[in-house]
Image (cartoon, rainbow, N blue to C red; front, side, top):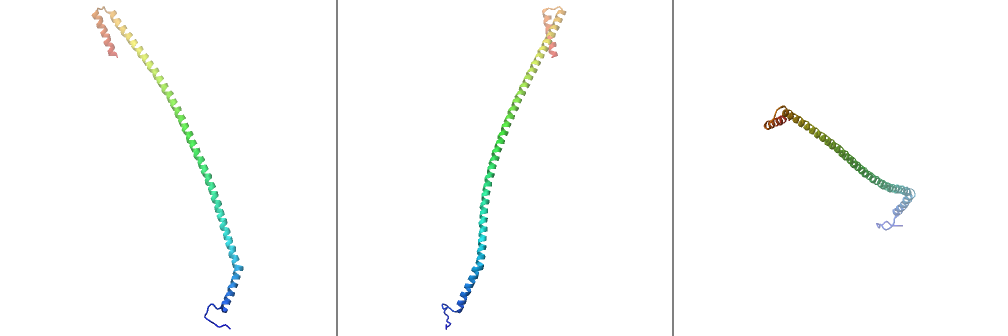
Length: 168
């Protein structure tokens, strides 16, 4: 028979029962609990793996979309530069056409003014000629109408010249 001692290294019946309980618990855990936990962990691991794959796929799609957006932006910038260049060329063309029309209008106005000046000059010349003729006729009528000597003749001419000066 075993004597009860306080030595903890000596096995007693409690230790054997505890070892058997531990084995039963270990068996129950390994038979029903661990498979459930293992399946749950594998399921969770698969979810994490699929989430990572989805995230990687989403990142790749986002990179592709970003590249497409960059391409579209580059094309839009090129189109905008082309539109601005066309607008500048159109503006220059309109400016050149407006300058040409302005030059033509200027030349037409100058030609019209030259014509009017020539006509005014001709009218002034005609008027002076007519006035001179009237003056000569008036002087001749006075000279013929009166008997003249040199002093009287000069006095009549001076009177006609003074009368012309007061008319203008």
